[in-house]
Image 1: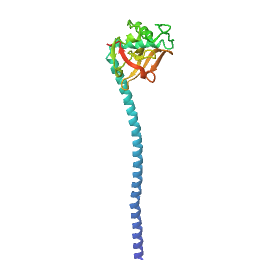
Image 2: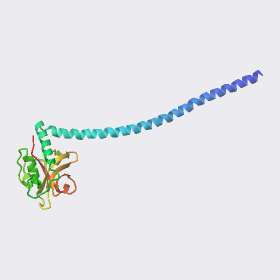
Image 3: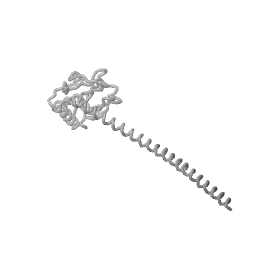
Image 4: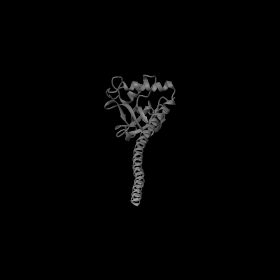
Length: 207
């Protein structure tokens, strides 16, 4: 009888130890899965965060470069350029007329000369001659208010068209300009037709 009780106790004890030994292993396995899943989620969040941070840094860098370009100007001339562009934008939609100098209609050089004349700057009357005004500017150093020049269908390889820069990306060399086109006064990007006809740029306000 005593042997049976002892045998039963030994069996029960071994079962308890076996169960105890299995339980931590099961919990340990579950924890490992949870940790792996949490790590995957962290990686995804980190990846999204990295892209967001990179995009934000790019925006800040572009804005910083634009501010750096404008910072070389005196405050007076920075305001002057903004006022010149405001004046130019007032005429968006006005018609193109060859030989017209404004304000009811313009040709390309008539438009740029009219806008600058409102602020005391006298530009030459033709785009080809305006290309000798001011100082030469590299395409990747453009800023607002610079004049940009193109060939036209009738000018061959010579300057035949002019516009006024309203926005420039000096990393890529891309820019937008306001000008009196055959569609009237509009803002265009330097792409397609204009990209292939770009000649150069001149800066009138140099300080």
